[in-house]
Image 1 (tube, rainbow, N blue to C red):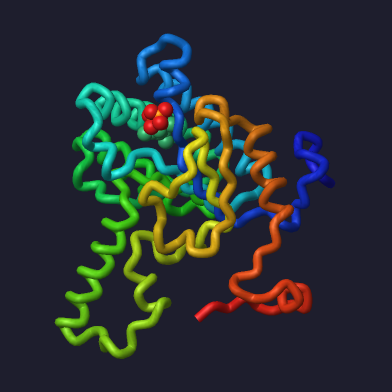
Image 2: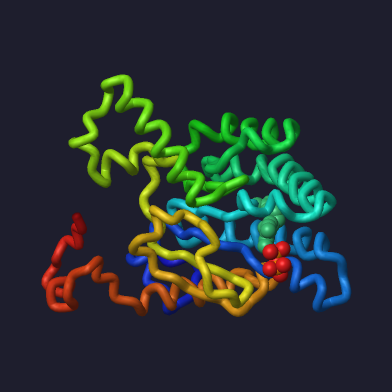
Length: 257
Ligand code: FPP
């Protein structure tokens, strides 16, 4: 039986398997209210919590949150350290709920740049939840799409040098196996809040065929209803993967090579 708290128009058989979110607009949300930018990040935690719960309720299998980009290191020191502190606090406070939901925490990005205590908090959450078989909760931290591709290319070149990989045999699948989390499916739905219309170096390889939902809401205002609107928007799209509409309707498998 359908749970009563689910939106009646959402088709539960067509829920995006992987939703990735660019959580933008915390700073503007705060400034518009005469508050300091960090107040926006603190309020944004409430949205993180609510969207994780909604994702669980709709049985989204993977949720990837762009929590800190590689470019964010250039922000004022005080803002960077507050974001790191919030992340640590979040991971400590929410671990019990994450465990209860059998969710698995993962991270993508250059973790070696994080302050030691933040890195320890992330690694602890990842370790504690490793055996969970529920939804995967992926935090993109110190993450850049181009950096990910460079890191993959570097490891691939090393393996080629060692004779473990034949350069002639490298195809998309082989290359993708060098990404940070190669076992995850590509995002079906990419959401960006904060009214900008750009990709901002997020999951450049993985979003090749993602549907994009742009929300005018600032991240602290993006809550369950806005998430449901994004899913409804996604369900109105026809995903063709380079095929024609007729091919899709007749059951084309959408393989792109
Ligand atoms: C973008 O808003 C948001 C960020 C740089 C960080 C997102 C972080 C959080 C929501 C809080 C901590 C995260 C977790 C996962 C616990 P912005 O500051 O760029 O906003 P602006 O474009 O209005 O300046």
